[in-house]
Structure formats: C-alpha cells, structure tokens
View: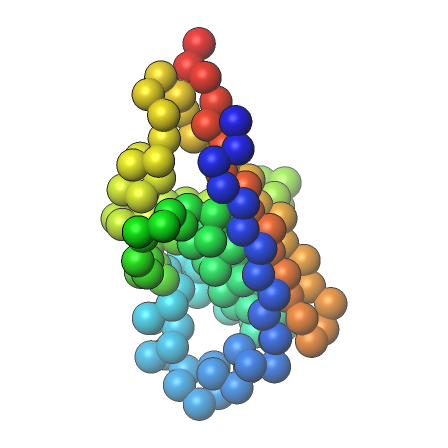
Length: 133
C-alpha cells in the first residue's frame, strides 16, 4: 500500500547561486559527505546537487503527516546503485518518521525518480508498505 508520495521541482540556477555564495556552508548543511563527493565528481555539480535537493523535499512530503515538522536535510540522502538508479537513504528523524507511519508486519519500500532539464531538476518519491512474508 502507498503511504505517501511527494514531488518537487528545483531551479538549478538557484542551487548554482547558493553554491557560489555559500559554498561549503550550504553543502555541509544540506548534503551528506557521500552526496557531496558524488556531485563534485560530475561535470556539472549544480545539476546533481539540485536533483538531490528536490529529492530531499519530495521525500519529506512523502513522509509528512498532519503533525510532523521539518526534517534535517542530511537525514534524507540519495545514493545511486551500480546501475545508476537513485536510492533513498533515511537516518535520524527521517527514519523515525518512516517507522512511525509503517503498519505492523510491513516493511518499507522507497522509490525515487530524478530528472533534470536545465534550468530545472525534479524528483518524485513514493513510500510504500509491503506486507512481510
């Protein structure tokens, strides 16, 4: 069963500006060291940072409840599997929120789709509960 969906669009130019004006401070507040290493390895880092920014927002929306507050940026991170497919990783408050909404005898499945077409990056996230077998 689907527990939540979220989508977000991010203007890559906004991320370019934040990276230029705030550099390491912005990166360290918003992205895990692994995300930073991945983005910096790309020819156009801002595009990768923007997709991850959109992903964090989309996941936060998918996990939101009527009474939930904000999540720490670094509690939601994006890693790529060997084929390049983006994977959502949750820690801290984000993982706690997932566990709080997960029905008993179910396990979580998180799906993420990312895309960009300059000057925009988009993300779509789905949180599912799968019956344990």
